[in-house]
Image (cartoon, rainbow, N blue to C red):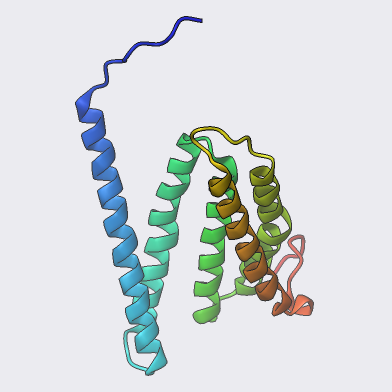
Length: 174
């Protein structure tokens, strides 16, 4: 194989990508601030809490998270993209629960269950068997495994609090 030489890259592509990343950062930070403001209003039983929470959660889970998922798919990080999808459904489930909308228990329970028993073990095992090279050191591998175990523990705690008798079957018609 011949070594590949430097490739010409259009500088405008980097401008476009950096604009998307800056816009994505602004959307993520703004939606987080809106969610925090909505939580404060809800804690003090003030008007506007429902509007802020709904708009913040919807912006975060329907605009910010899909852009993160798309970026993960472009980087060929399939596990991260699937985890982002279920995080988005978990966030929507929290919104549905706060607003007392139907299907809240379904969204919460299934997203936590699939994340706990499917995605997180695959993430931990994949990092455990990842090859160490100059781009991915042993410290990086251990850091990812510890983060995976931490996420696994948090999801286990959340799963322990789910009332399994109230979860509707995905095959039942509401």
